[in-house]
Length: 222
Ligand code: SAH
Image (cartoon, rainbow, N blue to C red; front, side):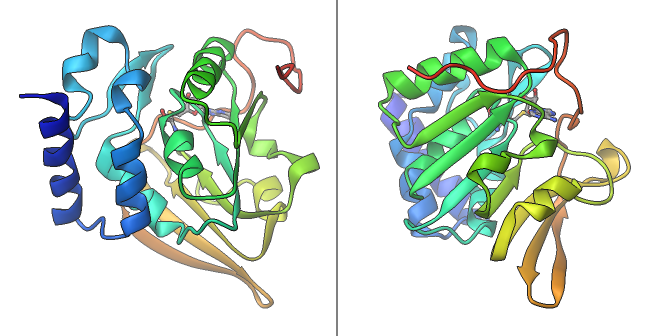
């Protein structure tokens, strides 16, 4: 089966499973997922499955990317923070829909590979940095949308809540352990945070420090 045919099959699967937002479907049609997976998995790039990307991390299942993007209620005026760049695929999908994407990763090699992909695909509205994403990106805050693509804890990190704009939406997997995680959507209103549990999910853990690296802030930009 050709790549184009596999892609159409995947898009139909997404639609059948509740991804109806036209902007999200279009973005997922535009972004070549094979660029974001290791060469050995190229033939599975358009299967609806998470795949290993090294360092114990995974590129999320396309349906999860579609549903989480849709849950963010996106449009082209928004500035979005993503925590957990990983392969860069989710950031690339967001970049096709919103004005600007800030994405944070704690693994230096993963970040370097993701940045290389952003350049190759000329996704110039994405800015990436090596840091602990739980602390957000204070200089670029507030964000109208925040997406966390690693899971854990029962409450969202306070710094992220602080950096969410009034009227903004945060989507984050929460739960005491991997078997009980749920994607939760928060809306920041004048009266505080509204919380809405969406569906069960399993993400790799959100971890505080940068593995094997001294604390640092930004990666030099080109
Ligand atoms: N969004 C990614 C998949 C995320 S996998 C994609 O589209 O491919 C989760 C990622 O979160 C991993 O790469 C992991 O290293 C990263 N991560 C975990 N805790 C983090 C933290 N505190 N700050 C930044 N990144 C973190």
